[in-house]
Each structure stands twice: as C-alpha cells, then as structure tokens.
Image 1 (tube, one colour):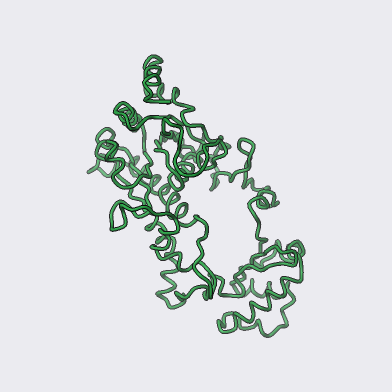
Image 2 (cartoon, rainbow, N blue to C red):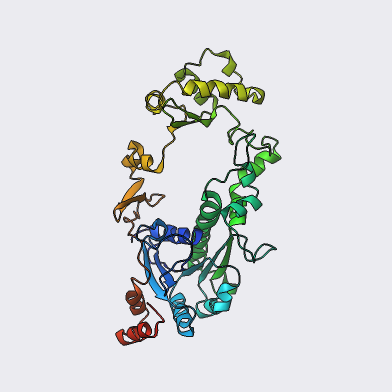
Length: 387
C-alpha cells in the first residue's frame, strides 16, 4: 500500500483493541504490517475472526506457535527483519516468551519496540487486568463525562483504547521511527522501547481541561461546564421525530446566528450567554423549541450556516450523509463500509484498505521473505510451528 510510511515493516503480535488499532493506523499509511497470529487461529477476546474486522485490515498474517522454541526463534527472525514491533500483553509476558526488549533489541539494535498496556509497564496497577473504563477512570477523565445529576458515563471505548492508547502508540511509533532514521539515540543503537499506557495517554487528552481548571474556568462538578453539557449553547437536542441535533454556538457571532435562525433574536432571556445561573432555564427553552420541528426541518434551517450545527447521525446515517460521501470519509472494503484512512496527504495518497486476512493467510509469503526455502516452510508447517 502506498503512503508516507511505505517501506516500513512492522511486526504486530496479535491482540485486541488498542494494539490492532495502532497496527491499522500504520498499515493505513503505507507500512507493511505483519501480524503474528496464534497457530490455533484464535485472536483472543470475544470478537469473531472475520474479514470484516476493521481493526485487522491491511495486514499480512502469519500464524506461529509461540509456545514452541521453534516458533519463538521464528518470531525473533521476523522481528530482526522489521523496523518496529507492537505488542499488547501484560508486563512480563513477552519476557517469559523470550521475546522481550533485551532479546529483540540485541538481534536488531534499530528496532522500535512498542508496548501497549492499560496501566503501563510500571506502577502499583501494572500487573493487573483492566479495561478502557478503568483506565479513563484512573486518569481523571471518566469523572467528567456525564450530565449534572447523573453518574459518569463511559464514552464507549474511544478515549482510553483508541485515543489514549492505539492512536498514542501510533504517534509514538512514528516519532521513534523518525528518530531512528535520523541516527539516534546512539546509546541504544538507534532503537528503543515505547511504554504506551492508556492511563498516560488519556491524561494527555485531558490537557486542556487541566489548564482550564487551573485558570478557574472549569469545575470538577459533573455536567456544569461549557463543554460537558452544562451550557445551553453546547449540547444535543431532541427533535419532533425523536432524532437529535447538535449545537456548538460558543463564539458570540455563532451564538447570534443560532438566535437569529431559531427565532430567538428578540428574546432577551438569551442575551446573557455566559451567565451560568441561567443556563438551566435557557436549556429548557431550547429543549421545547427543538421539539417543534423534525430533524430534517432543522437541517434545512441550520445546515451550511455558522450556527455550528450538525445532525446527530448513527453510523449508518453517517455513511450516507452528502458531506461524508463527497469527501470519501467512508469506503467499501470487502462488501462493507468502513472509515477511510485519515488524515489525507497531498503527495502520498493511501490506497483503499484491504480486508482483514484470516490467521496464517500469508504464512508462506512472509516466510519466503525471510529467505526460507519451500522445504523449510513445509517442515515448519508439518511440525505445527506455523499454520
């Protein structure tokens, strides 16, 4: 696949969630990503193994038995041919397999060794299990998702797994690969280990809120701030047909546009936009107002204006929306619609993603790229080392 990372080889040890998302990002932008799947064909977790797995798209798959010495030796050989690896096991698992940083960086001093965990490689929580909801809770993010009077509500697993985890690791891998290309750090031979913890990454995503709190403009109370549904001009509203629209009219000129198009220009109650004591009453007025028209009617009135408006779309609706269709935000891959690679480049346009491989689909191809003969490949298959 063409793209700015063309020529980079990444070895991904199969996992779930944020690790595969990192691999997808790198593959989407041109890297050759070879996933080491289990010889059993399982990938762990509750998701079925299918070509419709978006997070597994664009890969080559080799299935190796990592419980055998021969399989470990083969994984080391593959890592020695790579620019980087991605692994998402608990701390210590790769070391027990004989595939830890000491071994792989000794084989390949320029290797970028990416480690994806929830709690990180160190710290009191490090050895224990967790999921997105726990990581964003500990990072100080979950406490701020929800409405006043309610309880903290997880924003599905976007923030910990994908924003603070997989995306952060993809950024870290790219930064470290760039560092290798520039010849450093000399003390490590060029390569290094990336300790990517979802708690750390989520904390970074909260940077602006920490700044606002320190400036005295963000309350730690739930759902009372401008950006967390406290404000009447930054929220979602139900329409007459049971659908929803979003309003983000923060700046005064956009707020004025909202008032004009909603018929509120002469309603003096809306003059004091930032009077927090009146937000609740103004929100009640907008709630009643938006229920007087269907979403399509509000679209006709407010789309393509500076209100800062958009209909709240489901995944299926988003695929069909004219703006997304015009930009090609979604693409058909293997008979299903998926998000297209993002962002866009002017000189290294990415190709259409390919469906996820089944475990071991490219075993022979990958082994041949390492210089193994047909006979050696057949012997490894016969022994069950690869599948």
